[in-house]
Image 1: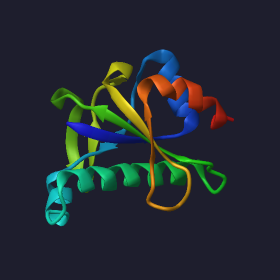
Image 2: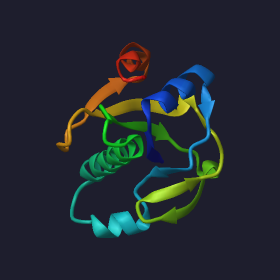
Image 3: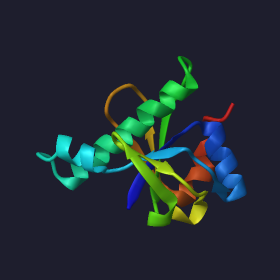
Length: 129
């Protein structure tokens, strides 16, 4: 299942360096989220979830946040726990090989820039403080 993890640039740098990391939760198409968004297609739901993760990333970083980061990952069922709203608790570490892409909100508009996994190490230094 596809999940979107909100993280800071420093958390992303650590994850990239270590190859594995623990995250508390991920945004996914939970039953509740699906029911509240049944009128839109899967692609639109995925976009909304990635925007929610990017917003949480900005919120975590505070008022001086340059970007909001949403990491798209393929989650295994054994890694997921209880669903809460539009999120699922993560029970096990996420491996870097599960990362599909990085989605970046560079403004407060609902627009995201997509980066492939091999591009992340190239763009990350501009955001790490």
